[in-house]
Length: 157
Image (cartoon, rainbow, N blue to C red; front, top):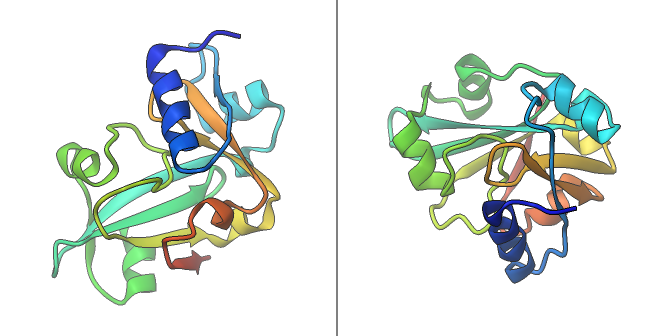
């Protein structure tokens, strides 16, 4: 299977981080977590959504990795952190993550951030996350926390 140049670059970034994970491209018709789950032959809950928020008091980034089945919004994040947060704009997301698309876990991010992980994701032995380009994903074998060693993981329910 051939993959795009950007997907190959992301796969190389993963390898540089010591993660030998294969990037797979989904059909162009993939638009939702349901579509992705069907294409990958997995449950919708195994699709990782990443959302970036900004702590309104400090300006610090907050990233949430959520299951494809759960809705996480500012209220949920604020309650978990005990502070007020707002949804980050596209420029802030790109500065924090290096990518303008969602779903990419914080791999090699330079900026310190608070990371919250949906408790439901911790129940799966494998998940799928976006690979820095539309329609490309990579499988995370094992628990998602296995690729996040440099981050303190706080489970959110």
